[in-house]
Image: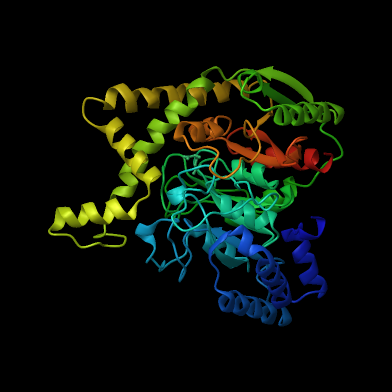
Length: 479
Ligand code: GLN
């Protein structure tokens, strides 16, 4: 396992010392992919010639003293809903299968500007709707720690890619937990930045008021490195915010202790009877560890937590029903010709979308329809405000909060056949998207029964990633 654990900073060191060229580095990853991708299935596409050519270009820049940064030549996997020029952008959906993106998402363009190599297209739940990657229209992705289990979702391909050592890092997107939950299931680090921290330009929208792009990595420092690279104001996304230059990687260096840090323990999360014993034990051990490291723990309350899943499935589906309306075979997406225009729409959408996506579109259209709008959508928006205020209130008495990421470890394929059961795997991650704050999942232990990784979630105040990363890296180094 240790040999597989690769980091961006480690790879940058190998490149700087000349121990490896970028071509050799990329070839090493391709070899690992050749060995295990057959059983993992993390990628939807990977153009080997293209990534090797990009590595060769990085090598010649470095040789002439013109490296774009110390990361020039380091590969980063990209979730298939974050577009990259000349690459597929299917969102793991049949309806977008034929699409080749003519442009880069801002996050991808910023990675390229630093010399990172966008490394293939990673599998996901269709349109990022799901928690197991089982909703991909193309194939399943297995958890590299146990291939009979799911990698989580929707950024399951991204988490599996990093956990299997196919790349040192990947980008994912998080609308209700889709970075943090698969990170926990696969035993890697997953950061959801504050809403607005990273431009959403070129991220195929699921629920625009909740979506954020973020990194999946093997270290907290690497999460800081990638956040430095992709964060910041972008005129193409009016919700994006300016970022401090170069601040996150430095802040993500582990410190000697956690003295002076107040860690809030939200009682509604910790007292949940649905938490599996292995998850509860890891959490208790981690609480003991932060105290040992000098942090003060304080009980806090997020009283509207119990409404988070319900509110999310109204707000997210409402936004999804509007966002996905453009995929109709006319404006975007594969067209299946019918008798007339209406029939062509019906056939294209009927055959192009999978069952879960259709369920969400139906739900979202229903909650927005006249007569139900006030009862569902408007009410949900009001409760969303209460949830956001809970966080503001709790952060008055603590610096970061600590919670489980998921109620249980990665489950087996087919185990959660009932959609509601699947939705409940996000009970600890969803509120943070509704509030807009930042959060990180770090590997904190292993389940005694299954041996699967268990994550712990740290929640930060809005735009407080620097502090969140500092606490997370100090903790992770000591676990
Ligand atoms: N699992 C949640 C859902 O199905 C969250 C997905 C996400 O964050 N994209 O909607």
